[in-house]
Image (cartoon, rainbow, N blue to C red; front, top):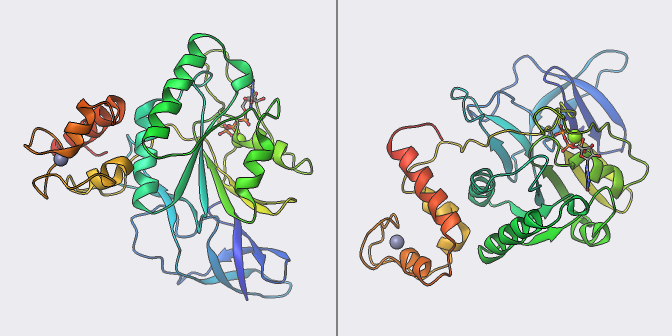
Amino acid sequence: MLGTVYKSTGSWYKVKLDNGKFIDCKLQAKFRDHNLKSTNPICVGDIVKVKINIDQISFIESITDRQNYLIRKSVKLSKQFHIIASNIDICFLIITVKNPETSTMFIDRFLASTFSYNIKTVLLFNKIDDIKDDYINKMDELISIYTNAGYDCIKISGKKSINIDKLRSIMLNKSCVFSGHSGVGKSTLINRLDSKINIKTLPISKSNLSGQHTTTFSEMYDLEFGSRIIDTPGIKGFGLYDTDKYELKDFFKEFTLLEACKFNNCLHQDEPGCMVKSKLEMGEISYSRYNNYIQLLTDIENNYRI
Ligand SMILES: Nc1nc2c(ncn2[C@@H]2O[C@H](COP(=O)(O)OP(=O)(O)OP(=O)(O)O)[C@@H](O)[C@H]2O)c(=O)[nH]1
Ligand SMILES: [Mg+2]
Ligand SMILES: [Zn+2]
């Protein structure tokens, strides 16, 4: 019988069968994944074929081709990748400018990855109830950068229920995922979206002003207004999957929307007739995005793992 993976702990998988029932399964010993260098062969969102054994352990036999997936590697760690979620209609990146702070490099790596895998991504600026003055300016600056780059940005507060209805309307009838640093309020937001859900949340650590990695496994929830959301553990860094230096420029959304540069292998560094450089000088492409692109490009050229 077919079903969808709602939770994975690495050894056990919680699957919602097509008849609506939940079942705990293990992975069949001879299971083969898709040859990705990933640490997990099955992730939340996967559609799998299950062999049901009444009164015994049921097994996942095979996986249906993924429509898309969110994959990352921990920036500092080896060559291993982790698939966060699959079969996603919309990915929401939750950003806070303070407690914890989200950097533009983190955002740009994340967006490069989701753009390359063709996953629509919306930026949610959370905890707007908790910021003033300089932090508001900082948030507005980020919103202007990412709106210019072609991304929808919404200011929200999970705690004070600001713009929650707007968020619900975007999520309606879709499979969604929340991602972002630990402590940005992913689980709080899900609790707010559906009052029947009560995911554990914890305050930001006072000593380092970052989250406490409260959510430890990804899990999907059916929301009563008609949407599915995957809550994910907070991530510190976002490493890009096997990226070639000539591919990177195609992962920056606004670069791909311009007229072609003079040279078709233009890396937007100092080549003549470069449209990205000319739009940068005209103020239509932000320095923040461009500088992060150049930084990533340099890292690839120096053979650093990005
Ligand atoms: N002021 C304010 N605090 C919030 C808001 N949303 C969440 N928080 C607080 O931020 C802290 C972390 O929230 P969580 O929902 O646990 O964060 P998370 O992103 O799920 O974190 P991990 O599970 O560790 O990845 C909690 O103390 C929340 O009450 C908000 O909109 N405003
Ligand atoms: Mg959480
Ligand atoms: Zn160029």
